[in-house]
Amino acid sequence: MKHISQGTLFDKKETEKLKRDVRKMMTSSIINSLVGRDVRKVRQFIFKIIAVGDGTAGKTSIIRRYVHEEFDSKYIKTIGVSHALKRLCLNDAEITITIWDTGGQELFDCIRPQYYRGAHGVLIVYDVTSQESFDHLDKWIAELDFNCGNVPKIIVGNKIDLTGERVIPPEAGEKYARQNFVSHSETSAKTGENIAEVMEELAKLIISRSNKFRAARAKK
Ligand code: G3D
Ligand code: MG
Image 1 (cartoon, protein in one colour):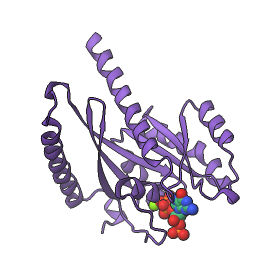
Image 2 (cartoon, rainbow, N blue to C red):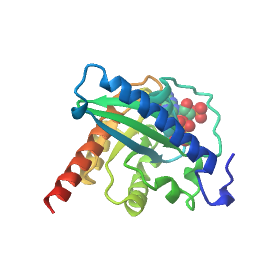
Image 3 (tube, helix red, strand yellow):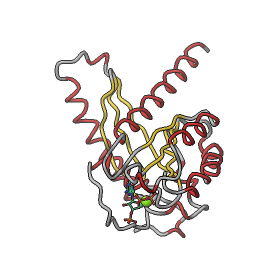
Image 4 (cartoon, rainbow, N blue to C red):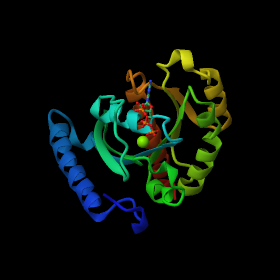
């Protein structure tokens, strides 16, 4: 258990565990990638992805659905950040995604900046049945720009399985995202609809950003 007064979201033990997990996963992923493949063409990436948005928009559920392929409506909220790892293969790239969950700490303005630190990609989640969560997107984007600069991001309208309760139509989400030059998708953590697709799209955005960055650096 981490204490907010310590001023850090990631205690030493958790950071060490993450490093061990990533090393283990990278080792097995390297071995797997060598089988029948030209190793010179395999590129390895490690991304940190975070999810922001109003409490109860479904951030934890999206992460759990993606990583564990499960949805638990009785999930007990914990105080503290937890991380999860997932491996993804995209063309010539092997990606280890570390996904960080706030464990409900999105409520505490003062500690969120530490959660943002080092993020390569962000899911900005709202709930399609909640006008308020949609109205707060401005605030989340502003905070994100301040803490992470122009990081790859996707606006995600979650809970589309609740068709009768929907108050934000897909077109409104699309329009808002277009106006803010951000991609937009809709998901259901409950049914799993579109979850893997959104994560893959975000990974592609991050890789494309990193390719552009490398090309620009090579030109200098
Ligand atoms: P948060 O991490 O953004 O705070 P949670 O949100 O993932 O904790 O989800 C908040 C509540 O919404 C949970 O309900 C969860 O089961 C529900 N939820 C999340 N995603 C979906 C979805 O796609 N569809 C539906 N129908 N419900 C969803 P409880 O009742 O446990 O608080
Ligand atoms: Mg949560």
